[in-house]
Length: 401
Image 1 (cartoon, one colour):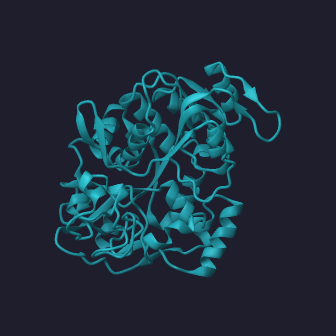
Image 2: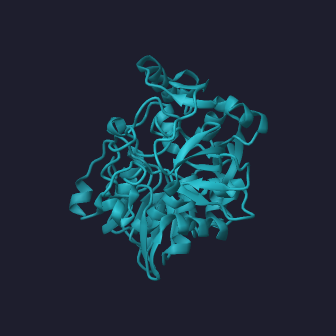
Image 3: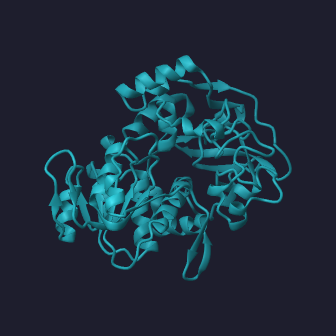
């Protein structure tokens, strides 16, 4: 089978770090990621099946890994060599399009053959599983970061039945492949604790930011949503998905001050508002975005980290002095709604259909053009794009697997 495999190689990793520092996505040319012919993964145990990816998205966490920017925090919960790709729509092996499924990639207790399951998995919060490095599988927080499962950047992988969601009839593959990142956005929007009429700022309008705006509009009672969008296509999509105010980077603090009637304090390196937004959702996860979020949220407001921050250096004095709530939002689980508990993936399917989110898939590439695909994904906004994915639907390539 054909697969893009990420191997443990210190020299190539160092080369990726150097290349990625010069140009986003450049780590793909010199780093540990290589297109290879490899043996198909074995079925790890009962309940596992083989699936053949049709489309597999390129996520920001994938790009961080390829450019050597991921935190060492992940070392105990990743196993090598792994095949990336956790945003996946696939065919069950042997069905050839008649049984399409979307992957829920988190590897919890059930997939690992652990019984009884941990408390988090018992609640349905698989993203908080306490056993992600134990059980029948090698360590791996998700499919796409575990050597035993394979990943979507290949012509064949394995999945546990509990990870698979049927694709509704009539859906495009593009709509199906956007379900997993939509689930992340839905979970983040709900974790933000938005109350009726709150002013909400969304930092970043890439895939995750745009999906978060859509989730806020559909599943919360947010008042004004202010979105920070760098590129024209992002601003256009953000408005169509529910943002009320659109600003470019560098204008967010001033726009939030005007919107909330706050005053600004400081004229040096540290400027912050006396009041500010009720909620800020950071879909970037950089040192600059965390600093900006803390500066523009009101005292006792809430900052939700939806983008993966990695290792950042941030002055947290304002967090203390203004009693700000800083929380993380990772993957998905069970969401408690007025109508009762709902699985995040169920809400994500609803949102994808309601807002036609498959339109965010801007371009697809075959595995053989992985360097071009990763460069495009790393510079998507500047190129007028949103989500970039690998296309594994070529029949000749699938038969060779």
